[in-house]
Length: 180
Image (spheres, rainbow, N blue to C red):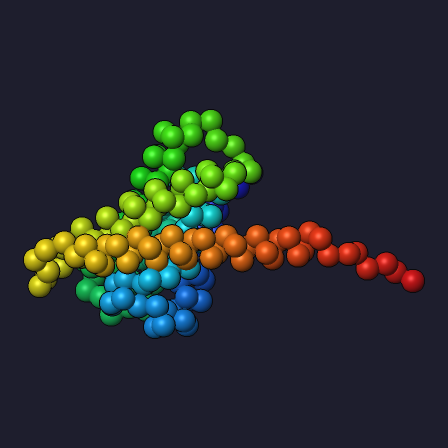
């Protein structure tokens, strides 16, 4: 059984890896500096939340904090607020999901994963846009940016799960090589 500290470390490293991989293609999908129309790390976050539960929220927040502190040009409080928001989105999604499906067990159906993805995209876009509202120079909630973040999280999560499904189905169904 994985201990909480090990789970947080795994989630942190996976989160950093997802952010790093996505940063290579992010420019093609940006709506603005903060919002992507196709955010693949959302799929990673969803998988981590479903696999590790509430502990994943700490790893996602810590991974985001490390990314923001060392690889982004944000003021310290902005990076901290965005990292906390990433973790909070995971916690709120898990709480909502546990309320809707109180006895959920793995493996989850596509319907259950879809509900989780929708709840994650909703909480994530709302929470992040409330942080954006607090930034200097922002005077109103940007509904267009919130909508694109919602769509980007859903698109990224769906694409992530489709690719993961394709890879695992190829791996499972490939014939074994016989030794001569």
